[in-house]
Length: 117
Image 1 (cartoon, rainbow, N blue to C red):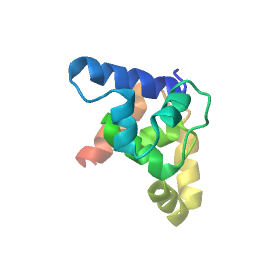
Image 2 (image 1 turned 180 degrees about the horizontal axis):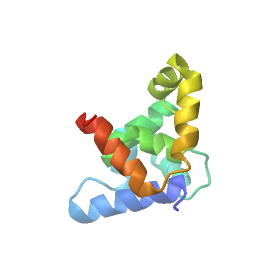
Image 3 (image 1 turned 135 degrees about the vertical axis):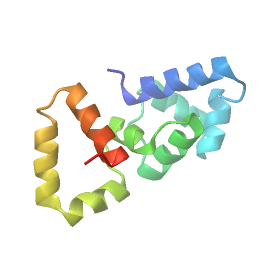
Image 4 (image 1 turned 180 degrees about the vertical axis):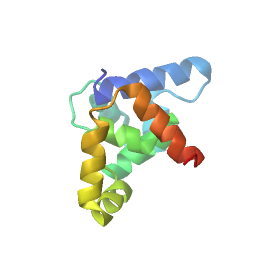
């Protein structure tokens, strides 16, 4: 599994191959950070930034913000609020999910998303 920085770099480079506008400078500008800072993040010389910066990077790189936050070892304030509403239940859900194979988790996600109860 890629580190946070490696994932960012690979994603940016993959997008740059498909269309213009994904240089390090352009993505840094879209995220509201300095290119030198993004470069250090991509080379894992800096820890993942805070929630808002990661959300801006996710938008710039066209990826899910919660996924990118998780890769950075963080949980969005929105997910934290969801967990805090039902902490015991959410803990149980997560503990059970970690025991399941990927295919079972994907099936569960599809069922919840599609409303197939």
